[in-house]
Image 1 (cartoon, rainbow, N blue to C red):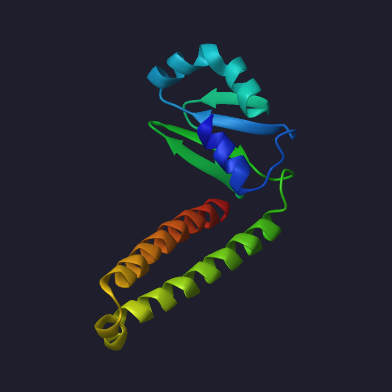
Image 2: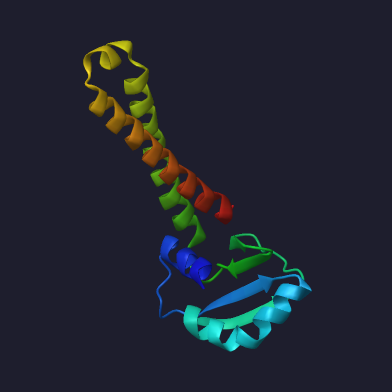
Length: 145
């Protein structure tokens, strides 16, 4: 449920819009989940939930890995894939620029010599935050390609 909701949020898919959800799961996991497919469909507002041992991942699908399962959401007709790629690519480039700036500042010996320790610690923490966000956005972009 969380994985599908995260994909919806990242790709700005309206909650009211029904989406197809495909789940690839080994037989043991499928046996545990099958009784709850109707509940899952309601909770994620899916038009259709299908489960199989393997699911063909169509180009432009969003994929989430949850334990031993793969959740695939075909996005064709749900979102404008080119617009989403461009939006995410712009955000990735923006974050890369922020990361370069933070790294440059932290690699500058004059900055390190003059700045108080708490400022350096704040910059290092900010760099870690930017890198985590960059990893998240890069993963989103990779899911769409």
